[in-house]
Length: 491
Image (tube, rainbow, N blue to C red; front, side, top):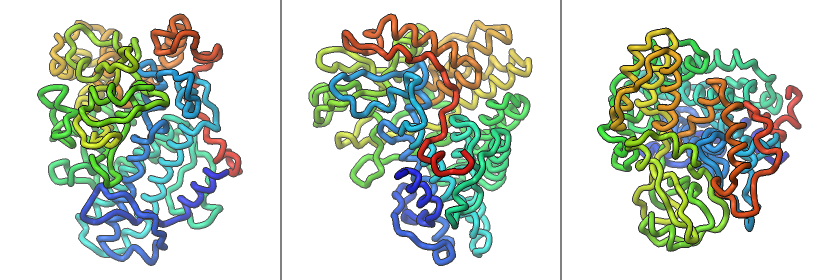
């Protein structure tokens, strides 16, 4: 009930008009103003679009409610370090073990945050054409808004399936309840919004770093077409993603000095320090319990002991997925000692910062390497296998691997998915890849059997394992949050 009331308040409020005009990263204020009173100038809309981006930090950072729990830890790439002495923060465990239900806070958080973005965009788009200011700036703001709404609905439909479509600000309580739209209709809306974004947004060279661009919108649209298996359309729009290039070394991609760099298409912006703009997912991903000294050994700064439960720990399965000589393995995975035992951790997000728990790493949503692999997939599925290998091998070459030995369409299909797994490891891609390729049930049931056969290999202390019912019902979609369904006449 509390969460549903919060979402109603969010949908009804116009308090999205936020952020400082001079600082794109600023968090939104909670000051509530009516749309008619507030939206009077270009500056108002510039602040409003800043506010529409802000929830993305909650979505991708979010402690145990981060997007990683559903996009990465749901899969065979990562897991949790079971802590029998702390059972207070375990909702992400249920997501991992396919024991979650409609009351689980992890999917509820994603659902609410995505609709918060949608609400802020709707409040911005409704009045913007009635206010006179520079058309080029107006188009840019509108393009960013359409991109963010498309991104939010794409997130919702992939994880929940049928969801309500809200395209106008909710001004009454009745407006907050809409029927569930079909998956087909949600995708139609995503394609329409992404298409609008493509037509309105500037190139990366002409856009402020960190904001959506024409390339980001085309990448999103291409991703949608990939999921829908509309291969020719995917190829067309993804080949229009220009002005980007692979960084020379894989490690370069994640260095703080290269934020929003040549390979970056869209990433969530964070900032080291005390301004409330920092990321902290690196610490969430550390195995726990861990002493202060053991954490300091990899961060190099004074730390405190961490005693709850570590999440998003690389599994033995992902460790074995790297080919010999693949430089991405050492960039992506490191090892830390926790109470005298060595465990893997996600190293690609471990960079210098000044204060414990407050890092400056951004979260990559789309990189050019993924565009190349998307194009390879779209080409291969159209029978253009030789051309597909050219794009696949560009990614492999950067990893210092030989050209792929795959030759048939079937073998190249498998090679591309394997390449995606290691190239995009820990970037929230693996679960959705398993779903769209139809392999989620087989892969995760086999994974569950390995966990039950050897719990200690998956970081369970002696005498502990997953519940017997874990991994028996591999559900593709998450249930709509009970806190929403209880008060909606439509679901």
